[in-house]
Image (cartoon, rainbow, N blue to C red; front, side, top):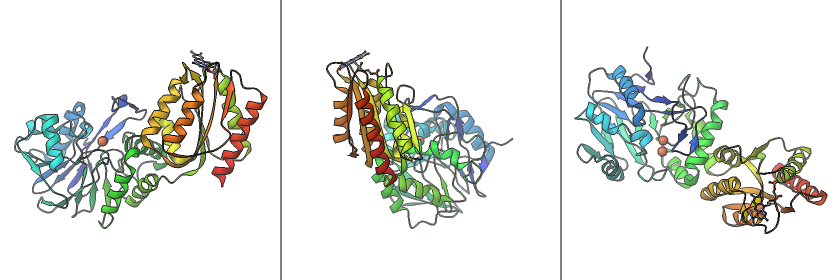
Length: 397
Ligand SMILES: Cc1cc2nc3c(=O)[nH]c(=O)nc-3n(C[C@H](O)[C@H](O)[C@H](O)COP(=O)(O)O)c2cc1C
Ligand SMILES: [Fe+2]
Ligand SMILES: [Fe+2]
């Protein structure tokens, strides 16, 4: 049975699902795997748009062969050089020695640096066209989404935008590959986790790219990860745009760490007050047990974030410190922040969290900030409840 999937008469998905990689980029857990989407345009000249990770090269080649048989590939279009897509450049070149690798000027530099490839590279400029016969492809540079050389390829004949990592998400495509086949509510969590952690630092380039492409008549969006959007491509553009503009939903993320339960009691007091004040969505996470990428996903989605952790070796409890460093890189805007913590002698945990509030993006601090000495007393817990009530007022407003 063929595992390639037709999208239009000439265009086929020849991607692969990766259930072997435990951590994407060595950092991000993949509980539901990830797809590397690659596409064949089987025209008079055959073009492949983006490849897959090198470990999946054999499956990739099999799927390409299903579509084109013994015909050669004329062009491999490299929209984005990250090795989860460019990893098969060398394998494909060996199988198709005449194949030209198509990219922009920056792509050419990376092809040489990563793969020692300097011959058989066709460099295209912003807005340039490539004619395959029936299909006319046009290239648009969309730098820094999320690598400097990123571009997208628009098939003007079929209205397909090959968008590289833009509009992509985690989670393998084990059932359908199209937006109208999969349970989108189920996918959205993994799309937003991909967006917030991988692309979230580059919201302005994403908005620039969306603006640049707005006049195209896009019928289908074919990203390099996650579902292919053929029924409602506007839906994923709108989501990426909303997330990039840092628009939030009402709700509060309560991220806490605790060694011996003292700070956890404070978290409970905050959480109880949030619930009593009618916050409908509260996402409580123990930072020791939850990978930061899941917490960051929800921090991106909701308007409130409350962080709480003890002091450890004169500084902040390490798992919370890791989360804050990840958040600092993203420099989030327009959200409300609450802080609580504890210490035994020198202090340092709350100090670090206050520094984060001042420099790690544009956070509105919700008072009071609570710092308990050892076990929280009644007054500390009452103050935690007050923080919960004030945060509730803010996010419900
Ligand atoms: C390994 C370890 C290191 C600590 N380092 C410090 C420190 O450097 N300064 C300080 O004020 N308290 C320090 N503390 C004390 C804790 O911050 C304090 O006991 C707090 O109440 C722990 O909260 P928890 O029960 O939520 O883990 C340390 C505690 C532990 C167990
Ligand atoms: Fe990438
Ligand atoms: Fe990617």
